[in-house]
Each structure stands twice: as structure tokens, then as C-alpha cells.
Length: 192
Length: 129
Image 1 (spheres, helix red, strand yellow):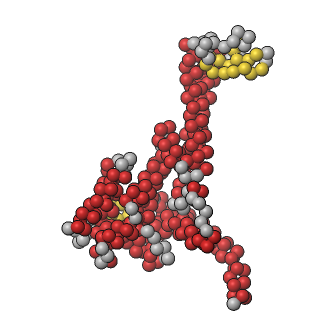
Image 2 (cartoon, chains in turn purple, cyan; image 1 turned 120 degrees about the horizontal axis):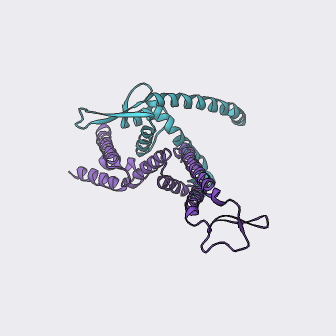
């Protein structure tokens, strides 16, 4: 009976640490590991304790599952949140992931900023634009209160379509960049 | 990951390097074990132990199988067994077969090149004896 308790407590710990996965994924893993423990103990005549020791701590096993799935699923996702979360996980593993995460964060901020100011332009035409002073670039974006009087807006209403296009491109490029970094890192994952 | 750890003492490095090498080959080895037909997790572990020197922590293989399945390289099915509980059998998908063939080619050309490179090292060892 104590072996049942040992197996149960191992599987409970595993279930707990597999939290972020879907219930279906989690139960499938629990079922498979349960079968492994029983088969392994029976086949080798080893005690459940030995079998569990060979499996390694439940928390570590769960972490291996989580990392593998998070990164492989995210590399096919288009959601900024999913992508950034996976990149953040990658960032904890080394310089490459760190750079990918910050480039991703920068790209999304730029993209969202451009799209947002594009939408603000028709509402606050005087506060949004690309401003020049005496032929030199002064500033761009949305300013509240408005820009100083000596500057002039070079784009006018063209700002909206241009910023929209540029913003969308930046967002797409950022998505593609993070997906690629995750795919590349996958090839290394199994080596770590 | 290695970057976040302190460097091991000189003497430990070949062991650590070997461990990394084994782990790196594991994905390919898991795919290769299924070339001739479906197996369940424990059978894959035993297959790798008997056909190669890939002794591994038993927990390592399951997350790898899970990921290979998520990538569409493997499929799985639950099969009832006499043991009283069903077992999860894995088999290669067409994409998995293709990927394994590519990996095998890359591996053979890579290890062939390295073996030639290492020939003089082995010669020298013999000369010293």
C-alpha cells in the first residue's frame, strides 16, 4: 500500500508543477508516467523508490515538459503575449534569449506606438506628426501639449497611412524575429 | 544554460562534455528507435540502452517524446496491455521519417569528418605506448 502512496504523491507533485499546460495534456502525461512507474518496477523488480529516483524529482521532470512545449508551441503562435512569454523563458537561459527578448519588446513597443499615433493623427492633427526645424529633424510622434511654434510638420495627413504601414511592418517583423529565435533555440534545447 | 553555471574544475570537463554530447544525440536516437515500428516509452529507453551506450535518466526521454509529438514528428496511441493498464505507443509520422533521414545524413558526414580529423590523435597515443 505504501507504494501506492509513493506513486500517488509523485504524480500529484507532477500534476501541480505541470500547471500551465492544458488539462488534457497534463492528464495524458500523468497517465503515461504512471504506466512507466508500474512497468519499470515490475520489469526490473526494483522498488518504486528506485524507479522514482531514476525518473528524477517531479518538479524537474515537469520543468522539462513545460520548457519543451512552451517553446515549440510559441514558435508557431502569433500572439505577442505567448511569444514574449516564451522569449522571456529563453532569456533566463543565456545571452541569445536575452537579446531576442529585448529586441522583441522593443519591436512591439515601436509597432504599437506607430499604429497608436497613426490613429491619433485624425483626432489631434496638430499634436501628431514628423516635425522639422530649418530642414533638420526635430521630433516625431504625438506630443501633448503640442510641438513648439518654430517647427513645421512635413507629412501632414500622410502621417496616418505611413505610420500604419510602418507600424504593421514592425509588428510583423518582430513576430517573425521571435518565432525564428524560438525555432533556432529549439535545436539547442535538447542539447542543454 | 551552461553560461549561468560556474565553470567546473579542469578534470570534470570531459565528463560534462560527454554528457552534453549524449543529450544532444538523444532526439535523433529517440526517432531512430522507432524506425522499425511502434514502441512505448520504457521500450524506447531499453532499446537505447541495448543498442547504444545512451544510458539516460529515465525522466529525460518522456518530455522529448512529448515535444517531438507536438512538432508532428511522432504520433501516439494508447494500447491495452496485459499489465492491467494501457501503454502509450509512439510511431514515426512521414515528417518524422524525413527528419530522421536528414539528421542521419548530417550525423554521418559530420562524424566521418571528425573521425578523419581525430586519426592522428589516436596514432600518437599508440606511439607513446
